[in-house]
Length: 168
Image (cartoon, one colour):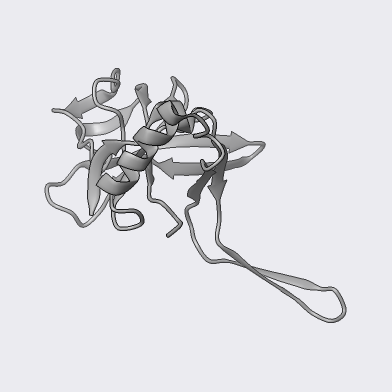
């Protein structure tokens, strides 16, 4: 179950981490490696246990843990290093075989050299989406899906990472 709660920003400020892919690596006795990328998209992993050292940080973290029931529910997380899609980084993937037609998934585009990665944005921040050409209505803030009267382009928006606790 997804709760539309935001992890305490004062605690996430001291966290470290980022995107990680699930990869199986098999090494033969001769040292040859085979790699199998299991997930197409990364999961964002952050270490926050060191960030809440003072009672004013620990108490909201403990309350948040109890409200989301530990690992049971997911929530929004503010990644202080990658929380915005700026002009030139906005991308859209058209969803096919869905109704109504002309639905598009909001993405952030990362390019290095000749390679491009499209990060699907599923948690845009309300009130930050602007400048998307051809958009009809408002984005779905729980999925990052928009409806457009043609190919959408441009725009800027803030993003949260969809997260859960990974400890008992």
